[in-house]
Image (cartoon, rainbow, N blue to C red; front, side):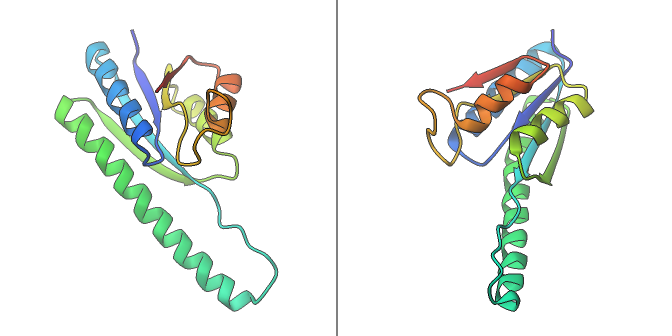
Length: 145
């Protein structure tokens, strides 16, 4: 049924549940999975540049370490299920655009993601990034709750 499933992850419990669902689907379909974590760039203001530069460096280091941890968690689930896995983290201003582009670039035929992430419910039913992916994706999107 599916050949390549994209799993956007953010470290939240919902994204972990979505990853489990995606891996189960991949196992049944004999598909591979790609996990992606989109890191929002550090937001700066023009004040005390040296302090902000140090803060930005620390932010980037911590964000990358978190991404590696999230990807390792999904890799462990995929390895346990015997599902081929690929993971990446990227910096992106608009996570939904990065996710949709990754699905195109990797030729994924399904995106499986949580209904909302760390930012909580910013819409009545779906998180804003999930909503935007639903509206812009050219492949089906399975939203997990």
